[in-house]
Length: 331
Image (cartoon, rainbow, N blue to C red; front, side, top):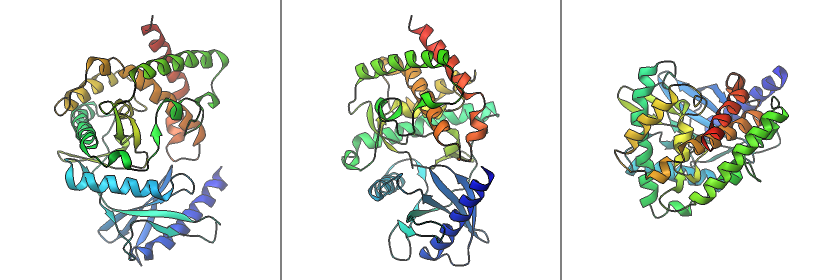
């Protein structure tokens, strides 16, 4: 594993080196920040900073990256949410094509202005409780804008529904492949997944509950800068249930006692802008467990990703405990 990571880093460093002149950044220094669905670099020249995002071949067609950039620019210009500004290359295009002698494939990359701030500290309860008020409000602004923006449904982005998370075409792989699962645990999660599927089928999809969403609005993708919260990393954005953004907000911490209070604060913030109906509120636990199983699949299929090793500890057992609680509530 160590050798593989080293080789990957050499490849990505080579790609970043090829990318910099395409944005007029000759002489700037690129430092690897994270390996995940994308490869992210902090690019710096003295005090000046930008963020380079290199996409893995095959994960996003170019038209999906273009759609993401269109939405980010619309948010930046017309919505009350702070997001990073994409920057054009010297050829006037946002998306640049890059190569490395260490790989045959061609990669794409985009560049963003650097946003100041720090991700909320999940160990600081006062900070994250306060942040979740604002996060709920920010999420509602995004949902309201996509509902009202007539071009949103025309964007070429993938769909986040039961089938693409837990069903027949799981985008991040099958949660059943998690190596720590035994037969009894698998049976528990299967029963829970069947109930999730039935409930979401009844819930349905319409303009008021389903649309263009960020899909990964968790603490790691927020930056707190004084009293301002900024949103980053729209790479997973697509068409899904609006409540998936709430489930994403408590990703990896949904099993902690504080999660209940975080959800309550998120809802207070959300209701400043949009109202959720009783039928929506009744499905919060369903969306949270669906997200939990989706991330179990992600952890299993993305073992090379930077945060996976730390996040994986106890995740399978915690997922089973949440599923058992969910099943008891259905009785």
